[in-house]
Amino acid sequence: MAMRLENHKEEVPFAHYAQRFRALAPEDALSRLGALRYDGREFFLRLLGREYAVSHAECAFRALDGGSVPGLPTQTFLLRYLLEGRDVPWGGSWKTFREMPWGEMYIQPYTGRVLQRAAYGFGTNVARFSAACRQLGARELKHGDAGFEFDFLDGYRLQLLVWAGDEEFPPNAQLIYSDNFAEGFAAEDRVVTGDILISTIKAQL
Image 1 (cartoon, helix red, strand yellow):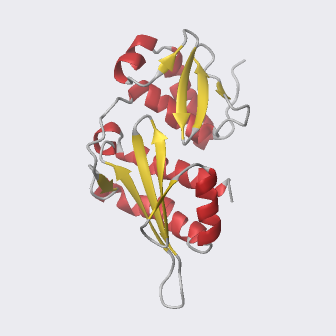
Image 2 (image 1 turned 90 degrees about the horizontal axis):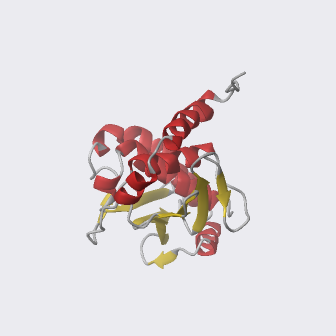
């Protein structure tokens, strides 16, 4: 009997991409993703400083540091990366979400899911936000009331800037992407990228 999927929002997309991933030819992924490692059984990915192995046959994730594996949304994102991602060199510049293709179309959900979530999650306690980012090994920036740069995934980088609220202005945040995100990721995946970063930082608070 087939397993019944109860959490459709997370489990159905994961099951769809897991089925595609099991049919993926490893050489296809390796040809698109030059930094990707594969030992004949597992692919190896480094996301926000943690390395994960993904078995090709079982589509099972494990953390090489012995810790917990990410949730299904992050696993689905990584499967999409293995299936469709490609290496795009960083040109040295940075872009906001709005400045990238389809950014204007997705700016409203992006603002709610990413910018407001970061602003009210971190701008109300900048000290704790900074401590959490340092724990993740992020590089401190001289922008905002607190700002940090992260190595996200295989040459793709993110900068998260936070401003504390006061009596006149609410807290604010901005997420800036290395310019290779414009070609390397679809707009929907750039939104998920922000979700993953914020959730990872929140887990350290």
